[in-house]
Amino acid sequence: MKRIALRALLRPLARLVAVLAIGLVFTAQAGKMKIILDTDIGGDIDDAWALGFILSHPEFEPLGVTITDGNTPARARIACKLLHLTGRDDIPVAVGRQTGSGRDYQFAWAEDFTALKPIAQPAADFLVETIRKHPGEVTLLAVGPLQNVADALRREPNLGKLVKRVVLMSGNIYRSAWNEKPIAEWNVVSATADAQLVYAAGLPLTIVPLDATTLVTLKEEERDRVRKYDSPLTRSLETLYRLWLDSPGARMTLHDQLATAEAASPGTFFGRRETLPLIVDDRGFTRIDPAHGKPAVVCLEPKRDAFLNYYIGQLTRQHLGQ
Ligand SMILES: [Ca+2]
Image (cartoon, rainbow, N blue to C red; front, side, top):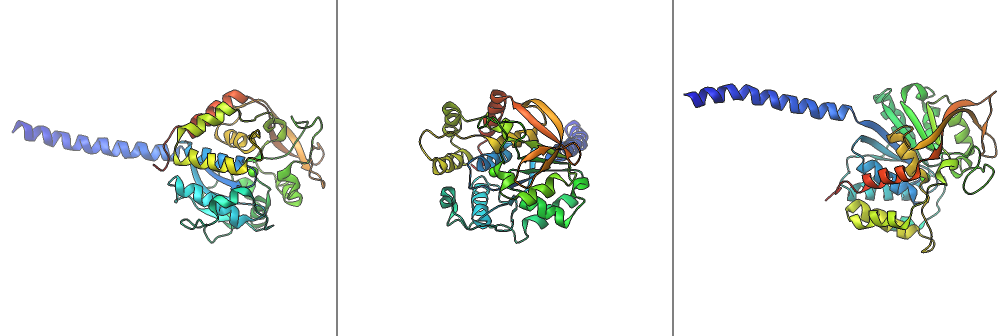
């Protein structure tokens, strides 16, 4: 009798614990950062490694990947394969307008890959629809030339009011490790008119420019940490790295990964951040212009070792897709 009474007492308690546990799961989901990655994956190597970071970071809720610049269908196959191998077929890939048909060494990795296909919706439409669905919640991380973000602005001029934050790997303000003077940075100069539109749109904009990214290159022992971890993700990243390598001595500069870390943890990995009025001129330079510029937060003085430890720590924290 006593045992039955105890069981009767415990049953509602167990139910309460279950309800609380479900509540906790939902709270954890609600606390995650909704993010869309806009990428020209397949050219430089940093995009694939940036996507890998997003997939392995527990605080991100990736809503989609949009593909920009050049041979976008071929780039999309790389993103699809990386998602498939890491068990993330649930994340949609949307293809942006094709602006070229060039090929790159990394394309070979996914040439025949068909197990996961991009969605039919064009990238800009996907961006607008997804950001509208979650007003004030989405961080848009764009690490390639800005065709898709500009196209999204052409469809929805109020994007700046709907998006939580736009983080770009973009521009060069003062100098870089490559040059004493600012240069026209690739993501800007590759689609200058689109970059002009994006910089002038009044978005809640943060940029991680060459001033910061050129200071961060991968050391051999850091690459080894990723390579020796041996998960589907790290194997894929190492394979793409080998396809990308021009010479055995080449080293990765972590442009897009630094912007990704800024999206994950604003301000943590920079010694200085300045809010500057910026314009993009017709030659693809990002210039300070107090009269016409729109404010953007500019990330400078990267904390190299802290960033790399954090970044590699995330890539090697889970056996994704195993
Ligand atoms: Ca890129």
